[in-house]
Image (cartoon, rainbow, N blue to C red; front, side, top):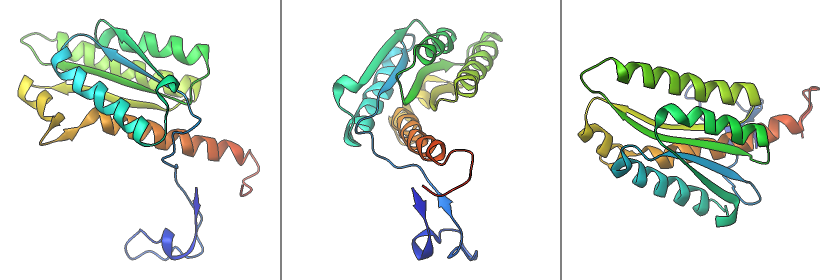
Length: 181
């Protein structure tokens, strides 16, 4: 979406009436999505998954345009994302998992490699990947981010993936010329 004029003026104190502002559209109709969801900590992952699916469907995705892939835990999320990206046919992916800090450094290793792996897939395949991997100090924090006071990060990850899918499509339609669509 290209915005010009007063509707584009969201930057407080910044003159934007002649500026071109590109934003992703929140329209999932005709797009395909895959959600990779970990089974570990399923008590928290399930509400994240339900919200991610709800977000995509409320924005026009049909049930048969959403594929859910289950993996054991956060460690396996990047590998599944990479296989989906390599296969092609998706406009965006969503990563969902929950890692809760324990008494050993295991938490740090899993969180670091999962986040790096997700970013690598997005970068390598030039494909939007919504990041809904919760890295929490305790179970209460995780529950709060899966539909509690802190909202639902599954919805937010799907929303970000959807917005980026629209933006990437618009940017690619411009080609390398910088021309307006």
